[in-house]
Image (cartoon, rainbow, N blue to C red; front, side, top):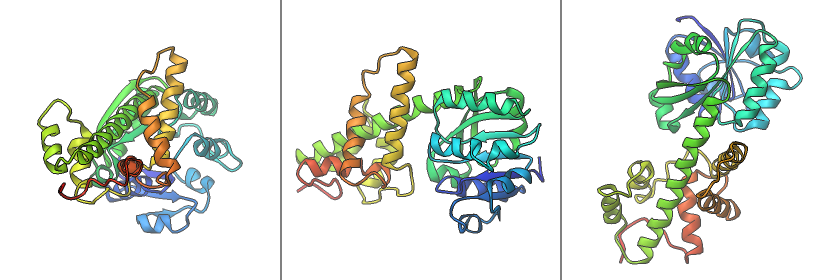
Length: 299
């Protein structure tokens, strides 16, 4: 697949890293972002408009923050729908509503264009290392066409089913991510309030049944004062939780556990942490517990 031309729309925290990995693998990337400095910073060819990025590409990737941004890019004037040509593949690498994804799939199919939902997971560190996980929905043939391209930035690629299936899996995964992050934050603040040494408490958790990705990969850094800035923000985490609850509503499945993380990230947003990395939920909980921080040894 060497020499593939990619239009990549959205060169933010994840998109810029993905663009850099694709370019390093020998593909030409036409990058478009609202920030004109984003493409040069990612080391890719700037595209002044969405149309320019789409028109010159063999396939189009979008790394955008939410449904509203995706719909504006695809359906807006001068957007993807106005410019695509039959035979192209368009992939949404973000976290979007499965129902909206299916609608966009149908619209683009009318132009002879394949649309993949291909949400990525792993965060900035995995993007830099090229070890992201992709959860894909849509045509197996379309996914196969982009397999070589995806391998430039992903170590694991899963095909979940038809259009929307990838974004469904992404929402389910992100709910567990939000739940374990907020719950571990609560436990660490409580442990600090009880006078326990945060590092020792974390060692206990990670050697026991309470261990999670959050306890193993996030909190060892957080207790050293490194919040792993650059990851998913609290506001985007909250957006994913709302999409998750709406998904379960449409499926007729009760959500017994969404209240906890929604309260945690809702609190974080109200206290001014919404635009900060979602790991800051631990500080929001610490704030309302009397200004507790989990860094350093307990006295």
